[in-house]
Length: 287
Image (cartoon, rainbow, N blue to C red):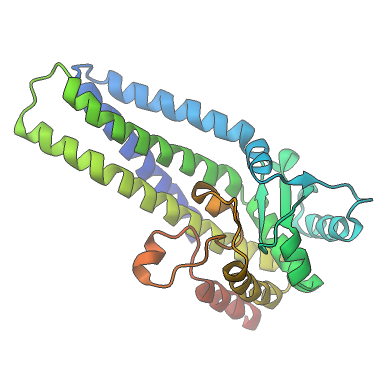
């Protein structure tokens, strides 16, 4: 409940930043409230695109190959079993040819969901640990995290683009800028993207904690997921994903570029500290 509340509040802040940016641009060009309306329209269009095409974009970006039950019977058996435990429709199963031990879930809803695992994770984990990882990804699907993350990433990306555009809008605007407008333009251009990124990353970390808890309940073995996270954190440092994009890091169960090592770095990390995730899972096991 707490993680869901955090997500709603943070998404509200993201939307507010976007509206403020467009409102300021509207002020520069004497558009009044039209700038705010344009901001809402842009947000709706971008969110619509993310909603309907997130699964296709994610799978194609990493050359994830959808596999049949004949091609990978054991993996399909695990996914089917855990989907039943989670009470959701069985997602499609995909494999990525990569030594990086990682996994992600994608899709706008249960009917369009897919879980992708790398060949590296299949080689590294035993079956109980693999069940923990897939349960975590089932948690993302059950909690609609793919949609939430896609919307947050889209809005944050739009804020960054609009903030850069506002610099040029300020230069070529017909408004007679006062000192206050100059300061506002500078602050929005600098602080807007930074705030958007911090909020987006906070949403991502919050949803990871939520998926860990949900996944532990689905597989009934919090310690198996904790053990998998230990191996995955070490594995990603040994075999980082070569073609991973920083904009997609939030999708994976562990950061494909390695985890944060300080509180400041953690502020700009897509994932919580692995040690904290493990600690929470161990508390669940004791409870």
